[in-house]
Length: 288
Ligand SMILES: [Zn+2]
Image (cartoon, rainbow, N blue to C red; front, side, top):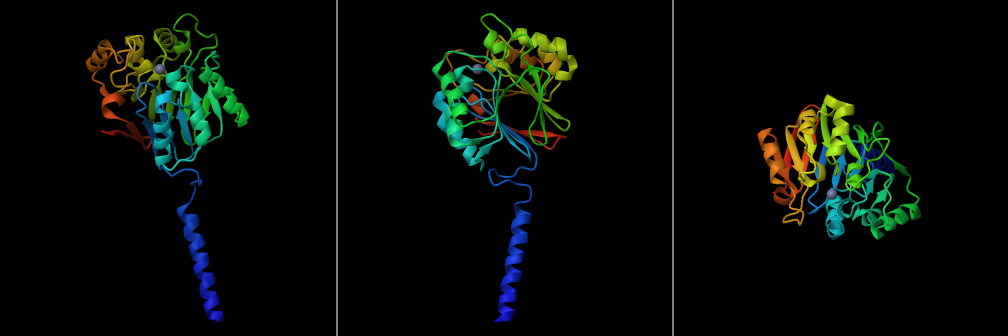
């Protein structure tokens, strides 16, 4: 009897050791990834970019209202129940539309936005939901850095004095250069030419990144030649809805990308586009 009890304890101890080894470093609220995994999710016309590092989960933008259930399903399918950082680049519906649904379906640990206030119901509901859940909330501007668990978001925009005018909301988008070892991806939000010019002036060749998430869905208001020259990407990913009413991406932008020999990916034809990097090299995979 005593011998049997010893065996049971030994087996229990072994099971505990195996459980600890299997779960080493992986919190219960997400599946473990060994590398950087960035998914530009197919949410139709809008942006939603899921960034996973070995340490954290970050979501940049939340797509538009019609895609919110699809977005939740996609993130859940990755084994994620908690999002460490939610960034809303600017308060237009195609970036903010899924935010309340994200807050309702996942534990969100902190929120950053551009500090732009709008009068839309979507914006008020998002603020109210964040407040109700007591989620730490802060603003981001150029020059700040956000640790995302093994990688860094180097914030390039908005500038200290926000842009005005009709394109102000887009131009004040949060733009981040995601750095993971020697790999960099530039996440341009909906920044337009004025913001691009200011970033070129301020950061110049420091914008250089292997992959560009195109500004403003490949609109001709963005991807100006000087900006592209500074970023000098090898691949561009356009987050865009099939047959969208804005006719994004613009043929002139596609031509510019083609002339520069970028590999072009677009969520309307490729589905979700996923970039994986070990900090040295990277690969890009299409859903279809
Ligand atoms: Zn947009």
